[in-house]
Length: 279
Ligand SMILES: C[S@@+](CC[C@H](N)C(=O)[O-])C[C@H]1O[C@@H](n2cnc3c(N)ncnc32)[C@H](O)[C@@H]1O
Image 1 (cartoon, rainbow, N blue to C red):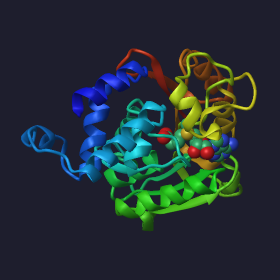
Image 2: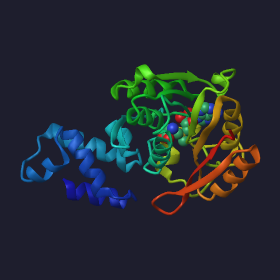
Image 3: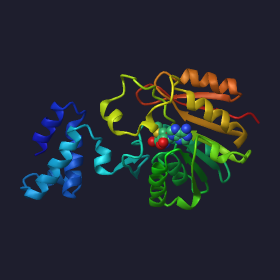
């Protein structure tokens, strides 16, 4: 079953088909991945075969494995995901690492996460920093429901406020209260041919695409709206798109941010852009 399903997915252009088949089979059979090998000679019941086939067939139709499994690991925590939210990506863990390192010495830090989706960024930061409190915004009510569930699962719900609205608009008027504004906003321009077809077909448009031709449209807007909300020396940190980091840095500097840094991801792509509000 492993071999045949892997070959079938490979033919359908799925990357790492063996890994996905192992995850889906283990999920369908209610066992750990390792058990597939420990029970290699166990015959499958008809019902088991049917449920494995159903999942593998959906994966063959490009449905992302994380949606089929219902969760994705991020920063060593399992996050519930469904079609209402972007699937957390490993490069976004760098944004969390940056924020946690920068906030470690701060007394009871207050953090905002704009476009929270599954809540993976803010929930991970609050989980790592037990004194921290957070506020997360999203235009999508469905995403906020998923984020609330993840915050509950990871024991940080009582330290997180979730607000529906555009960028930082829900926080308007709360001046000088935040230590950090974090965001992995949509940054893909519609029609970009590098977007994988399973991503384009299944992940929410509102999580992927900017409204026009400027990939840093939301980065600039959030950085501008963050200035009055941040404490002196508070910081912004963004995940940005491929080849957008230098432009994002220039925009943060134009807005008056200091010490603007760019951090590459494991593939060497300039990914995290961060800057500090002047004292
Ligand atoms: C790229 S996803 C990031 C989700 C999550 N933070 C992560 O890193 O996996 C962007 C999120 O921003 C939300 N969003 C898009 N436009 C927005 C806006 N103008 N204001 C607030 N949220 C927005 C989308 O609904 C989506 O959940």
